[in-house]
Image (cartoon, rainbow, N blue to C red; front, top):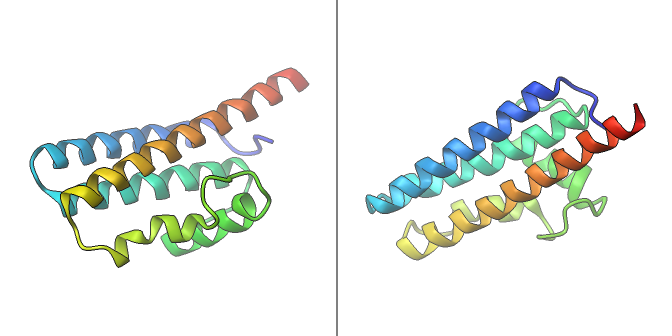
Length: 130
């Protein structure tokens, strides 16, 4: 399954973790909009990592959201939401608030946990096949 440079995938997931830290810091500083943006960026980054792992080239945030639904959600690989795009784009339908920032951050953490687990499973499958 792992068809690309695994270092790139690992780096993107680590960058997602960093964005989660920024989101948590923003919540601690009552900067709801900043927190929400960092959570959004973390999810998009992690989705890009998984797409690259599947050899799906993606260059835009909109493309990443669409491609993730096509290659993961619609194929039953990601089942936490009926549409990853809709999950991520809540950012456009909700006013920045403490409650939304906290909820969105948790959704981002859950997605990154999924991404990490999916990546680790793919790496394990490659090792077992070798």
